[in-house]
Structure formats: C-alpha cells, structure tokens
Length: 316
Image (cartoon, rainbow, N blue to C red; front, side, top):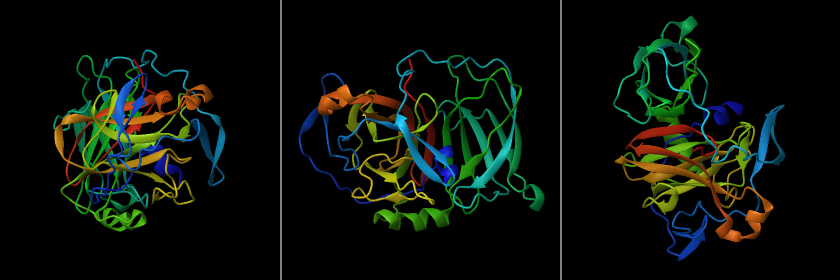
C-alpha cells in the first residue's frame, strides 16, 4: 500500500513493557548504549537497502544512498506567506474527512498557530481544505500540522518542508480514526492504552527511496541511544496491505521503511526519534560499533495521539 509509506502514518498502539536489561553495547564511535531495552531495536545483520514500489509490490534496488548524510541542509528560509490547499483523508480508507480542523505550526511548537482551516463536508469536495500559512520564524524551515475531527485521534504530521519560493502549494494530510486505532493493535498482540503516546514514520535515503535493514527507537538524548522507558518498536509487513508485524516476522525495518514506536510516556520536553543502521559493508563488519545515526527528529510525546513525521537522512 504505497500511500502508507508515502505519508509515513501508523496507527496508535500501546502495550505492556517488555524489556531486557541485557547490558550495553558501543554505538557510533564509542557511545555506550543499552541494547534490547527496546525489543524492536536489535543490531541489524545487513547493510541498509533502498526500495521502490511498482506494480503493487516493493522491490529492493540496491544499497541505500547516504551521500547527503551529515552534509549541510538544503532548506531555504521562509520568505513569504503560502496559500496551501490539500485534502484531509482517512489513513486507512483514503476517503476524505469532512469537518476536520487542521492547524499548521512552526517546527515542533504543537500549540502554536501558523494557519488554520476546516475541511469541506460537502460530498463532492469532502476533505478538501485551504489555508494561508504565515511566514516561519527565523531559524525554522519546517512546518507541522495537527488534525482534529470527531471519531479520529489527534494526528500530527511533523517536519514538512514547503518551498518558500512557491506562493501556492498543495499537501494532503491523513488522520487516524478511533476504529483503526482500536483494530490494528491485534496484529502485534498489544492492547491500546490511551494514557501512552506513539511516534511513527517512514525512513528514506538521499534519493527519497524507502530504506530497509535499519532500526528505530525514541531516545531521551539527542545523538545517543537512551531508550524512553517502555518504548518498543514495530515494523511493517511491506505487503499489498502493509500492516505492523511482530518482531519474529520483521525484526528490522522492512522494504516500505515504516516503523512505529509504542508505549511512550507523555512529555513536553522533546524526545528524539532515531533511525540507526549500517551504511556500508565496512560498517557492518564492525558490528554494533559500526552503527550510524541515519535520521533524527525531535518531537514531544502526547497521550492518546499519533505523532508522525517525514524521516530523511540527518543533515547539519
């Protein structure tokens, strides 16, 4: 299901803690970090691969491209207001969601307001919205969006870059329904806990291709693996209908690049969604010491909400 990986959305889950205090390992040039405190964060057994979707199936096309990793960002500063249009749609069905409120905000300032709109509830245009986005503050180049609607969880989409040279742009945003949030946990044998939060997304390489053989977690510390208490990562099946699966089926990121980290304690201070892997065979040969931080995004954690983002190679 291409649209799942394109948007990077995943359902809301939570589950009882399942951790293994199995000591520490050395990551990324000498950093000691606990392993398997998050059972969905094993050391991968292969280098990261790039994948594409065609004719209803995912295909591996070679090693992932990390040529832009840790290079200066190509983001340009905000220079004008932007007229944004799009559709609020249902994460699972793709149908338009009427009477949904969508609020834009700068960076990860979830309570700020850079523009607001309500989606159409007319049959022919259901889900369509239009808003005027104000200029981003100095030093901020990415927008976030919050969607709220009856029968839906509060759903956030972070890390959205809108080219400041274009005065009119389009961006579709998905929302996760209560029914989806309640139904999908069975696929990984968990029980939803509305007191916990979820962070999720899809990882892509420097060419925008979905990445496999990487691992994801949520850390309390930038640049270092310090798993938030209770965090557990699950990856998706990359099938015709991509669904979250147990660790025994996909212990690391599958061809669709999708992941979801569950059972997160709510907090307003930023946590750090991290993606780690082996870019090269030489890195793989080093074992855990060769793992590299491929992507990282700061995010709050909110109870009974889905926070997703666009995950790209980490830039300077």
